[in-house]
Amino acid sequence: MGCIAIAGSCMISIVQFFFLGVHMAPFFGSTAVMAAPPGGEFGGWGWWALGAVGVLWLVSLFVMFLDGWKMRKHTFEEQVEVFLKDLRSGAVTRRGHIGLNPQKYTKLTDKDADRIAEKAGYHRQTFGTKGQWLFFRPDDSGEEPK
Image 1 (cartoon, rainbow, N blue to C red):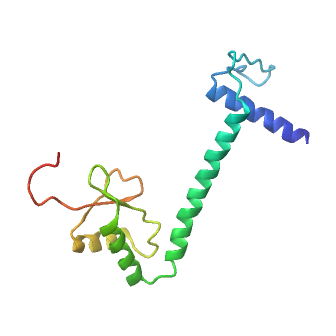
Image 2 (tube, rainbow, N blue to C red):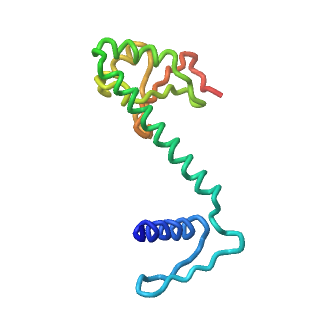
């Protein structure tokens, strides 16, 4: 029980140090002296908000995992059909890209996705995508989009 209390007090100290700007002693050999500004305590609502963000993050990871888990049972041809359906019905971003998660299509490689999208009339952006597949349809009018 004492170990849990020590871990809890360390966590509170870390949270206060990073989020509230509370400064502790610079080395471990001395006792830690903390000076918090008035009203700077991390109240009960803060722990609830932090816990809610953590739970939402875990749920989003689980949903991403389930998408890939369901698709692993499909054959390559079925995944190509789902990929094309998602590509044609995907939400277009402000810059005109359609973002797809490559983890959903477990049997498609980057080269397969490029080849299939090229046949459908889309091109893939390969730089700065942060792990996503970003596809766009080139504009035939020759004018820059506004």
